[in-house]
Length: 310
Image (cartoon, rainbow, N blue to C red; front, side):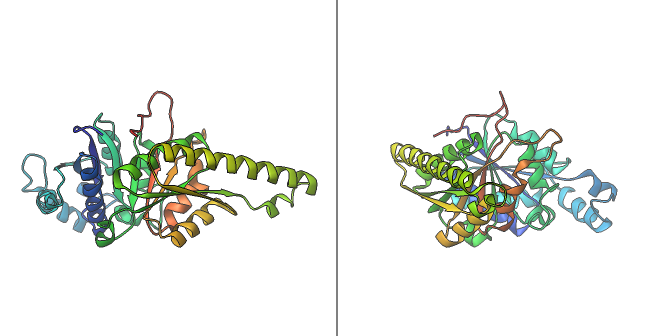
């Protein structure tokens, strides 16, 4: 990353947003980037609409009444406190829907990563689809890291990265991200591919056809994993690979817990024509249930995806 690179952190002043800022500062310091905090004030809060109550409005007014130069007192306080972590920090507060604000600021050429607290923004840990985090994932052209740890755990160094791959174009983006951050954080990488349980296939296919398909799937998966290990080794990254059977989302969550991964890296699959993300069956479940942070590579859209620095 260059000196002009920026890590964007949307904040809602919750403890989880604070944890995201702490993690962002450490990531920025590792790659000579700066941190930009942004806070969006939904106009519904100001008008007493369905997104907020009169108490919400009073709190919002208290935050912004004395805000000089477009920066709220809360953000200024966070900047002063977190500057001790060694990263250059700036802050912006604007009257705009948070998801729209994130999408707009993410279009800036210098933004290379978005870091968000997972359990802030109206408790998206329980309701993900339609949340600010979900809407940001759908619109983002840059990677998004969802931080699930508390502030203390988020301040710990990332030592183990779990790369979950299905060998798709989205997984290729995730591989580049895993290599990028493993090099800068001096972290180890564990690569996991899960093949759906062959027992499920036997319910729909003849035994001979099922055995043949299972053998091909295993051979293709092993070849794919060997290729990834060759690339990580060439990049100077320590990596191992594992192949397992079962529902991918369940196996990823189980493996992350067993290996004590500090970060799971995954790709974001393309959306359907009706705009419903296909990642609901895997990535969304992993985001919901895994205990550590999740780094999601952006969906590849022709002509819009920025190259991942490696």
